[in-house]
Image (cartoon, rainbow, N blue to C red; front, side, top):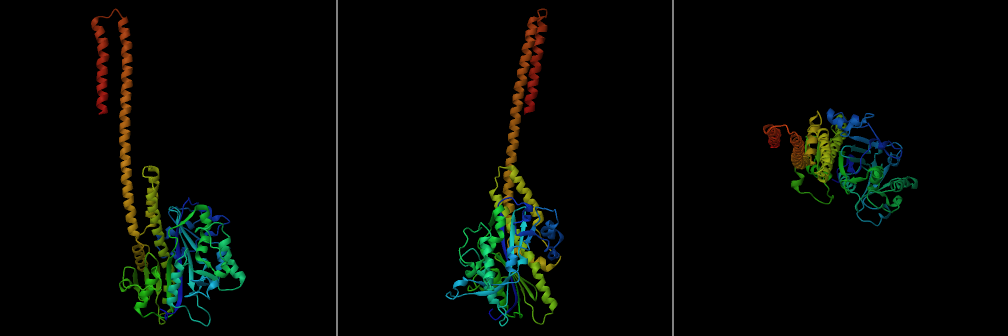
Length: 485
């Protein structure tokens, strides 16, 4: 891999998160917020079917707030990260920059971070989202060649881990103090820290770390809604690679695809069986490979110098479509994980909460889970690969099993309520009968007094006066008893 030079290498880093309090759609319009809604990505989604495109783009229309559709946000033009990263190169290393002379096994790469690529894709109904930003490998200098494939693999491994001792350092390649001083805002501009106590160091000398950037980007949301990450130590990377020359060695291709989609150190060697597994890779065109797993994804554009510029640009441009497909897959997985968490926390004895959850689940399932996403077969093939390897269908089945048990509990709860109501009706009828009987006795007593006072009545008339009410009362009692049964 050291001999394979890259024409281009890009890593999109995705970080799923959840909010622990209610989202308000107008929050991103506040002046102190660095995020704002955007419709800039709508044109990139034309390859999607209309209902799938609507899942991403429906809320870009002014005044539209569809809970089951996404909100896409970008950085404001005057935000600090835009000023920090715009048209500047950074050094990426596995060691602090202040003591690299004494350190062993130092890795250094030159990268650029595109401020226009920062995104938050948020799903209001489930309160989950994905933070997304892009790091691109840059040539070392005018007198040196491009980075090698092996370097790019190491760079990918460095970037995907954060909030731990192996987290990489970044520092402005421009050594002027005013340039490096701009990074101090990543520590000082925000009062709280998602990961706990902030690191105390002179980041103008040591370099700042990706955890600082994540804290800065999500801090505004954290202050309002309390951000919680699904995984505190790992980004999900999606890599795009275009070598300067065609890679003719199939073993190198397979090994590269493995490293980019798996969380392994470059020094660990995969087995032959792992390299040749077909369930995580597809090769729909001679020039392009797709590979994906739970840990990450990669698109390899293996063009030759003999290929036309049309082919080179076609595969390069198609990478953005691949990124959005993987965003969709990661978001679907995140949504299902959140729904599974919520259903495990539900109180099954509270029918109102259960009803609200089932309603939200149904709406989400109808509008966020798709079988096919495009009219082009290569996009559907890649989406099928993503769905399979992100275990979307398994999560759906697990959630359905949970909902089945929840429905059984609700059915039993409803049956118990019906029996309880029947018993209450019987008790009510019994009390009513007693009241009616008491009223009948009082009426009969009054009649007796009147009859006794009437001395002119014969014995037969007295018998009828007492007998008729008794017979009618007995008949009335029997009718009520039959109705109760």
